[in-house]
Amino acid sequence: RPGWREGPGDAWQRVPSLPAAAARLFETAAQSSGGAVRVFLTTGRRSLPVFTGLAGVWLLARSVDPPEPPVPDHVHVLLDRGPYTVAGERALISEHRLDVLVTKDSGGPMTTAKLVAARELGLPVIMVDRPPLPAGVRLVETATEAAAWAQG
Image (cartoon, rainbow, N blue to C red):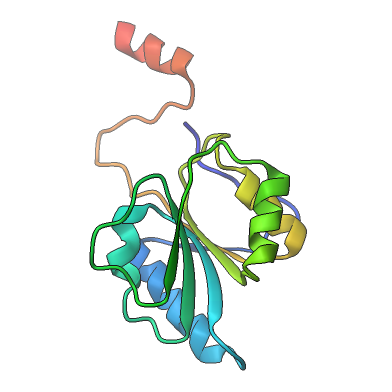
């Protein structure tokens, strides 16, 4: 499925990897004048170790299944499964006073509500790009294109 595309009103910062997202959060926290930077982390439970040891960062990490150690010190894990609504995401962001959203560019409609809510609330988004395709791999954006390719 196609990745997400930034639209009018979005404040995305694209990074190439999860470690780059953690580094960006560290920079953001270092530049913050008061309190911890409050992060909505939706990169999956297996990514949590990348975000350990970030001073000045508090994480609300949402995942379907509980994470395995190591888990960052300043994290609240929210176990939940989409699809999500814009109203629900807006309420979650407001309730937890979140400053930034960190997510992977997974594309698809099931979790776009967080991006719409971030846009509406003026929240910056650190978007982790998809890894580059290996050489010789063809990308198609629809099932029809895939079926045509498979049939040869």
